[in-house]
Image 1 (spheres, rainbow, N blue to C red):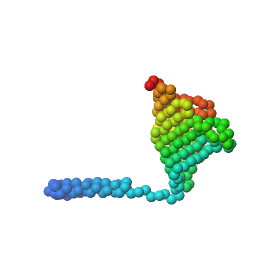
Image 2: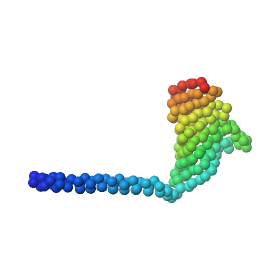
Image 3: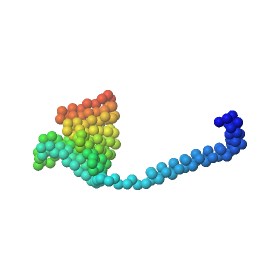
Image 4: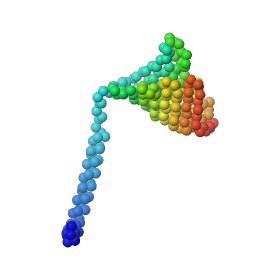
Length: 196
């Protein structure tokens, strides 16, 4: 572009400065309005049902080892994808039974774990619980946290986020907690105790 062409473009912009600014402002408003209404429609539109999805309500899952009950899982609602080895559960409670329960005997609950939601992964044999997790050992401590992972095969409970443990009037806090059921071994990282 020559110098005279450049000067004529600048003089055209100066003469029509109000119109150019008005067009830029209107373009921005139009773009923002389009984005707002487009995303608003997406948020309000109901999600379509996925193909191959199974939705269950009031679920109950039992796990047995040599005809003896090991644990029982209850949930309000569960979603399973057809090709998946996972189940997402809302309002989940797990009762872990004492070892050595006879097959025809009523199982005795040793540990109760509840949470807002859970994810059962059959391939890796674990249950991940999230949201207001409460772990209570019968006649033992009560533990509160946000996340818990139960390794079904090894009967190992991992609470990787900060925990609060209440037992016999004392409150213990820590950055994480692990519990091995076969060894009956609890480990808490960075414990701090306070008496209530």
